[in-house]
Image (cartoon, rainbow, N blue to C red; front, side, top):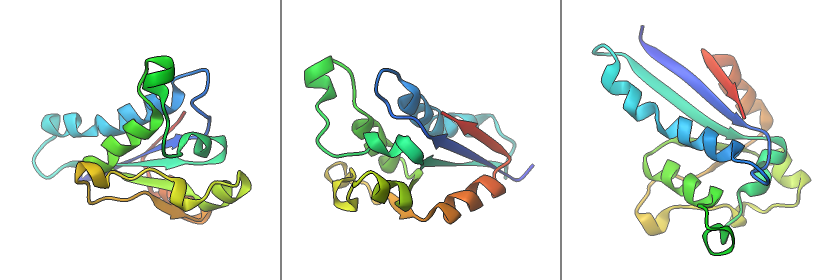
Length: 136
């Protein structure tokens, strides 16, 4: 089977729903799948934020204090901690006036991975190369 590439595309904001958190949880869960694979087979997920999906990616979310739920920020930090590739569409950040400096990182948790801000053409390549594409 080889390497199965999966793309998780977050295109909706997390407001009034759990769509983005479900995408993040599913993308992280790929590690559990690997124990069921044959030797040499792998699953490579990529988590991509496009369109209005980029709106929930800002540092300093206080979802636990305000709503009693975990924030998208904390979930994205967990992605970075387990070395999951997280791509964010540069054009959409620019469209909504979100600076790259306002995106979360997991340095405080010891993560080496960083969010990758890329042009949509890079996200299109991920879509084209993936055997499974899930939209959230």
